[in-house]
Image (tube, rainbow, N blue to C red):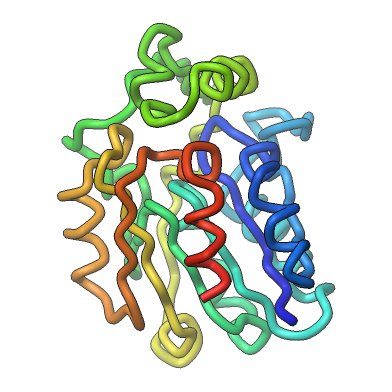
Length: 232
């Protein structure tokens, strides 16, 4: 049996995995979810949240897990699992990028997304946060979800700390590059367009590319299909 560590993306929290966790556990696997600092129910001040805050949290979770883990990152979580893999590559069986950013050495999320069409937001430089514009949230993130799930999820999004988007990846072939990688692309994604997803995953070697006709939230819109891919 495997241990899955699931890392959420920006504006969200561990709650995004609520449909996925029981399906994986039903098959006998161990599943660990976390709230990144300043996200979900974590009350860390946005001004204190950095990429290192994120990777410290995931690193601690991975090294305390029993045996090597399958580390899954959604959206912004792709950057988090990328940098974490540099620090504990021997503890990671496989990296799975779920419609996620795939930054390379020397890149940060800010310059990776510059000029790309994505979520509509309001940036508060004083508070160091970005807040999603309410009327666009469902169409951007939950466009294939049921109305019930979309409204429920929309109510849970929080302002996103900005500092993690400004800090560069520091990766090596000896550590990060030795971890096997899989990418799950989502063709109906309005947050990270499928063309951009493909541009990113074609720049690196991936064991496998899996395509889902899903939105940016397949854990809510197509959880059974997503779990089949994770199990395989």
